[in-house]
Amino acid sequence: MKVSPNRDRRAERREATRREIVDAAWDIAHAEGLASVTLREIADRIGMRPPSLYSHVDSKNAVFDAMFADAYRQLGADFDAMELPDDPRAALQVVAEVFFDFATADPARYQLMFQRTLPGFTPSDAAYAESLRQYGTLRTSLGQAGVAMQDDLDIWTALLSGFTAQQLANDPGGDRWRRQLHRMVDMFCDAVGIEETQR
Image 1 (cartoon, helix red, strand yellow):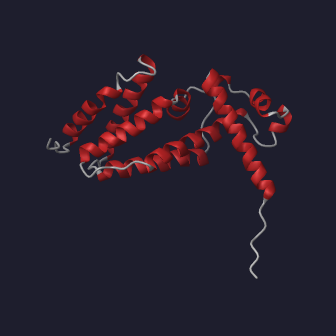
Image 2 (cartoon, one colour):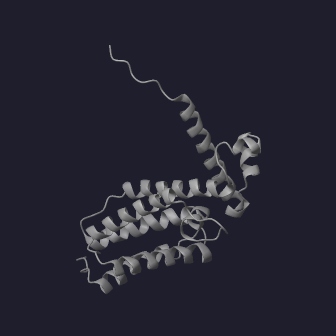
Image 3 (cartoon, helix red, strand yellow):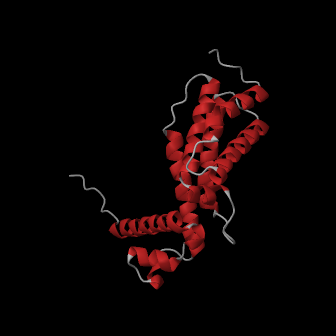
């Protein structure tokens, strides 16, 4: 008779508590902004004494680090769900919309991922590796659409992040810049030599 290995219940509980800490931190960030995330507030929300929290995270920056990695895993899930059409311009349109919708859906998450607004916070190598994984996915998706040069990829990310920043700053909750994504994609494709789709 084959016996399955025992579960590591302590590790499972520890991971569940860490997930609860990250979820509470996101709740605070959504309600009050990233700067309002404190260990005391997190502890209060999850019913833990602040000193006990230190057995799970050693600082507020460790919480931000876990949130940073979590945010990139969320982006990865959206990238994984993409179904790219064969047509290069249509594929780039899908990539643009998926990223734009992800970024504008959660301004606090966008701020943590793409803007350096938290004094003293730099993602750890492990958390940053998650962002590099998603950048690799983006690079592969764009490569399938014919965007192979690093300079072209740099222009793409600058355009798309600029559109996102404009939307968040000037029309939060609206669609002013989202409505222009097709024009951005067409201008980009014209500039990098991706042929126009027959319509």
